[in-house]
Image (cartoon, rainbow, N blue to C red; front, side, top):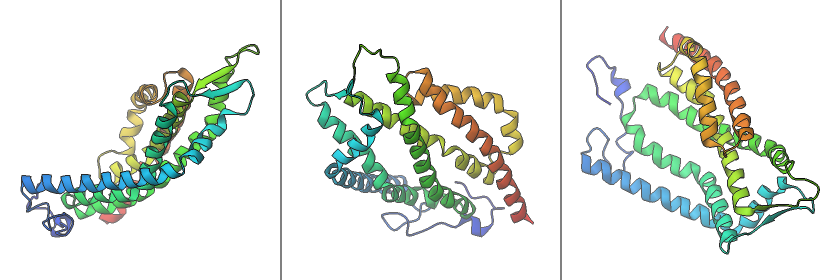
Length: 263
């Protein structure tokens, strides 16, 4: 970010200890910048590998937790249709769980890389939003898990009394993880809008003006981030539209806070 003569000194504050080589981002050259990025990526990957290995120990419990909404009807089964499918399911579930488990660690590496390039006023906005985003993601994923039995029941309803339901375990886990991820991300929307409003990027008036465009975009995004069926798209898009309306309220709150700080 380029300093200007009119920028207050406190808003040009940089952290000299934040990089791996002991230099502030302002004084780092291009090579040092890449070296700092490389070190932080390696640390983040090591954290992720350690978290995944730990979650592998409990992978069977995690798989049982995710397959519980499938139900216990004797005519409905989850099957392994490929030789390595069971192993891949446990590995995939452990990887996702490892990402969640180590998120404070690799997010810390990410923050350590980008924070020296931010003004102090931007840090005051982004830090609380980052902390709150973890809780928002968990709430969103929990909401997705809550509606999961209804989604599974809807798809199971297409079978008849003479047809047994046998789904691939791998495909089912993919569906569940996509659904939880989709809801976790959608619940981040109000926080993102709030941060953008605090930084002066958007206003409540702009959000209201482009409401129709946002709804169309939400429907498109819902179709992209969910499995290819209308039910999942609607289930994700409706909460997103509600969250967009909440975002307008959040942006209005952010605007009032900005105005009070200026006085």
